[in-house]
Structure formats: structure tokens, C-alpha cells
Image 1 (tube, rainbow, N blue to C red):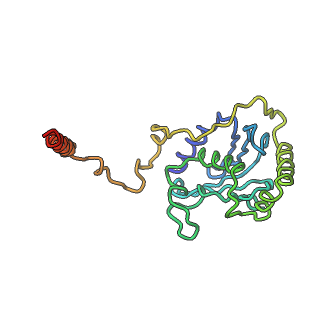
Image 2: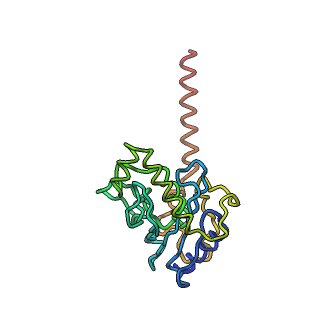
Image 3: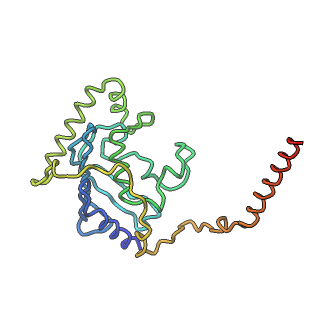
Amino acid sequence: MSERILLNELRSLSSEKWAHIELRNENIYEWDVALVVLNSDSLYYGGYFKARMTFPKNYPYAPPAFRFLLPIYHPNIHTDGRVCISILHPPGDDEMSGELAAERWSPAQRVESVLISILSLLDDAEISSPANVDAAVMLRKDPTTYRAKVKLNVEASRATAPADFELSALESIPQEVEKEDPDFWADSDVDSDPFGGSDSDEDLDMDALSGSDVDDDDDDENEDDDVRA
């Protein structure tokens, strides 16, 4: 099941200009990813950041792991390249961190939403709970030096890009995650509701609701008559 889902996701991302993806050793559970920062307003604009994604065999019920292969100086990126972001955390509420289930991984998430979330994180750092404390302090107290470090990261990443890489030829990065394609999971075995939710709440008695509305209208009319009297 997970292989089929990942193949579908790989195909859907193959035409994107902001993400270059190859299988590692032809293994569908290991992806070599390059994220291209196309937002000209970003400190990381022009970066070609290589990373590795690994997927568990029970994907999409558990999140993938993501790690940048070159150092990126950022409050929410560990020095070993691991990214601290809610969407990569296991499903469910976390009382320790205060993260809600809606902020964390769920089987409805897709690789695309993870990658776009990571790109967005680069310029929207969460400095209140940093993975790299030094970077968080520098961003807050010495932003000029911080920007200089980021520029070095971008230049280093560009050195790893393919010889034919041309930033000007690429399209702008999408501003938001695309809505879920209803046919996306058609070839997979994932249930439409992986948690077994019931549709009974949708089967409301519309006649009863309508009757209630009528009664309310009658009460309003009677009150109007009393006022006129």
C-alpha cells in the first residue's frame, strides 16, 4: 500500500520546478530531494538545498523523516540538518510541547505539504522553541550577521546544484499547498477516513430543523402582533 501511495506522490511532484527528487538506490522509501528557493523576498533566495527523506513502511500513518545534507544556519534546523517542524511530528496532541493534533502529521498529509512547509519555515522561524539556540539568539540580536551566514549557506548550496541549473528559468514557488485532489488516493488502499469516523452526524433530520425554524418564525410574528396591539 505505502509503495503505491509514494509512487503517486513522486509522479505528482516530478513536474515541479521548486523540488527536484530522485530515488536513492531505486528505493521508494528513500528520496534524494533538492529544495529550490524561488521566493525573491526570501533570505534564502536562490538556494539549492539538498536533503534526504526517508519513509516508514506504514506511511502515511507515520510521518517521513527529513534532513538537509548541508548545514543551514536557522533557529529550527539542528546542526546535523534535521528540521524541527510540527508537520513531521507523530500524529496526536502533545501535552509536553503544547502542539495540537491539527499541527502535526496526519495520514491526510502529503509530501508536497511537508516540503512547502519547510520552505515556508526558512523565513518564518519559530525562535521561542529553537533547535539551534545560537541561531535564534543571533536572528533576534544581530540580524545583519545572521543574514551574512544565510548568504554563505545559499552560496554553498548553489555549488552543489547541477551544471545546467538556472534560477531565472524556474517558476515562482507556490504560495500555498494545493487542495487535496479527490482522485489522488484512488489507486491506494487508504480509507477515506483512516480513523474510522462515522458519517452519522451528516444524516440530520432536515424536517425537524425546518419545523424548528417555522416555530421560531411564528413566535416572532406573535411578538409583533403584541407590540402593535
